[in-house]
Image (cartoon, rainbow, N blue to C red):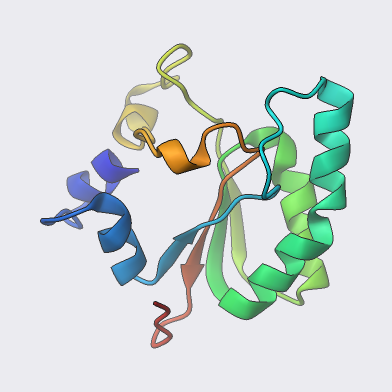
Length: 136
């Protein structure tokens, strides 16, 4: 994400996540506890169980857009957005790691870089706030 922001003129000085928040954007996990160690069926069950919690956060944020950074959770995130009565535009992109990398040049510019606080969590829907609403 940092590379994509910089490539689009939104770079700057200081800690990346602080700048990200200063734009009024959020990185938020679907599941708020680590689930990577769980078997696939249990991990999926945790994602489903987290739908209402994400809906509450989406209702609080009132985003203009939601980007699911894992294709397999896009439907769950969509349900959460509906529960939140959100009219946010929704996008989904494949999760990329150093191992699987971007699938084409345009994805290379949008590569997400090391946010250790997110390691082991199920998903990272990034939400973009409504104009004029700032959050600390």
